Image (cartoon, rainbow, N blue to C red; front, side, top):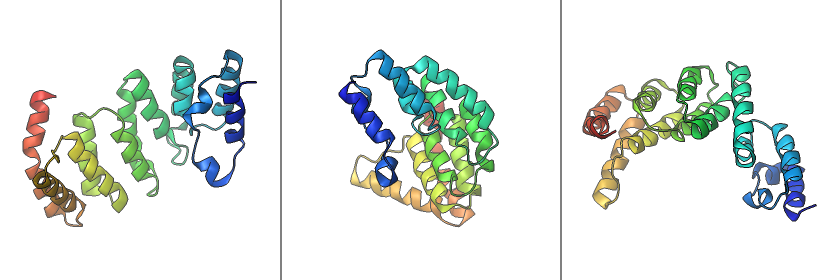
Length: 203
């Protein structure tokens, strides 16, 4: 039995905050082929959490499992379909699953929506993600989801923040987008139009 496998089993059997910390990368390095299969099967029992390690161990097999689970779990607001969707987009480049994330968003409970917004940020930026962030900013009641969508929108539009002056503008835009004031949000969108044009021209 390899040291990596022993470490994995220890972390797999952990509880409480230690378990919540997730797996350390070193437990997947140094496994032999038989151990990799055992670890893979054990990780499947914990899905959707740990899906990224399945891809590390066997990306093709993980992609098949992720697509199967995603199909079954869509519509269940507590099942974490967005976790699979994010990883499928990352490893396959299939933006259909990004579309699924957008379509499924309204069905998630309020406490999960910020996590879905962050998952969207881990997929490629395009006109659909920008429209998604703008819609969250305008229509979402969850302040955490709005705050995250605001920052992700500015990042997607490549709003600069290299200098102190740029950072001040960036922070001002985020503040406007987060206000409970539709007109302030629309003013911020208007200020972002030049970045939208740059994205359309160069994207």
